[in-house]
Amino acid sequence: QVQLIESGGGLVQAGGSLRLSCAASGRTFVRYEMGWFRQAPGKERELVAAINWSGTNTYYTDSVKGRFTISRDNAKNALYLQMNSLKPEDTAVYYCVARASYRDVVLGPTAHYDYWGQGTQVTVSS
Image 1 (cartoon, rainbow, N blue to C red):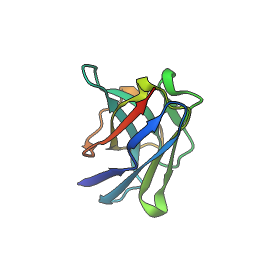
Image 2: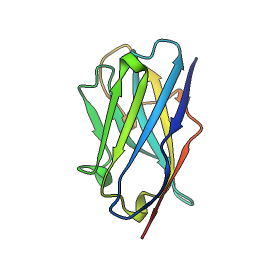
Image 3: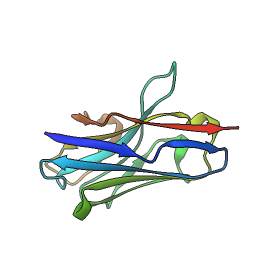
């Protein structure tokens, strides 16, 4: 089992920045593809970004490319999402996710993520 705990959400004005963190515990963190999902009220959950074991490959949904950066620190069992130039449409609950992976690849939206955090609210005011 892997436990994921998010932090760093909050209220920010449009154009501002936030950095989400995810602390992982339990089984070995390294062999997991990690990612961030978000869900806004009345909308489907979507994968925002994902990253492979070694942090060398990433996936971003089109709406956040150039604004968000996903990264990980395996020594600290931590995952991050740096969010810049935030927009009101980025308002959502953000979830840290993980899946065990036998290959050092990022599947992104085609992957099934086994582990989910409890979520952290991000609100962007206009």
